[in-house]
Structure formats: structure tokens, C-alpha cells
Image 1 (cartoon, rainbow, N blue to C red):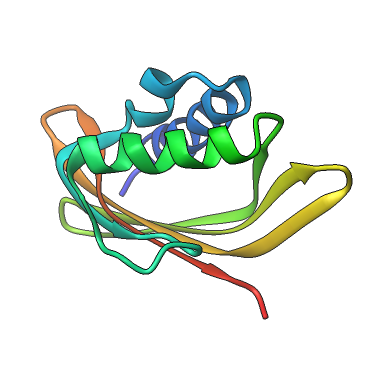
Image 2 (image 1 turned 180 degrees about the vertical axis):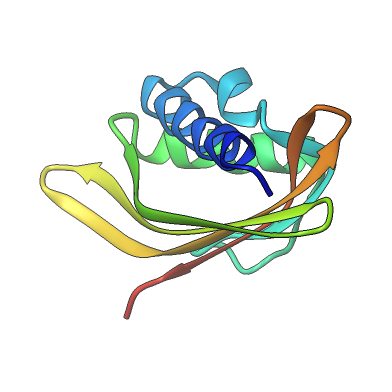
Length: 125
């Protein structure tokens, strides 16, 4: 895949992090496909669809209104019309509390845009 597509995927990741840090749910959800399925690092249940993902983000923001989210060392691989972004993440919960982990976003190409169809987050132990 071209470097421009890799840059596009990384830009989507950065935009999502900024939206989460502003508490802006529409921006946080923008890169996800309607049929999204994923797993959270803190909740056991599978997350299916944008409505469930919205509720998950609302849950986190309500529990920690000053939450921050950052990704580090992102890496993007491609296979046909699928891109896989892996990264290390840090969530700040306020009062100096932080959680660290690893994440994967599986993107599917939709015309000229890319959407996350699957996400998996794991806490570092």
C-alpha cells in the first residue's frame, strides 16, 4: 500500500485521540464502521455496532470526565483492502492514575475512505 494510505490511517488514529480527549463523541466514533465489532480492555462483553460503542465511550467519560487517551509507536500493515494498525496506548484517569496497554484496529477500505471494522484493546500486565 502507498505511503499516503498509511498516513491517512495514522491521521484517523490521531483525530480519534483528539476527539476522545475533548470528550467529543461524534468525532471519537467517526472512523468506525456501522457494523463494528470489538473488545474493550475493561469490559468483558463484546461491543457490537456504533450504538454499543457510543455507550462504552459514554461510560468511560462519565466515570472519568478528565480522561485522556494517547497512542504511541503506531504501526500499519496491509493485506488487500484491509489495513491493521497496532499501537501502544495510555489512558489517563486523572490524579496521576494511568493505564497502559496494546491496541489493534482493523480497517476496511470503503471507496476512498477507511473504517474500523474491528478493535481489540488489552491492558498491559
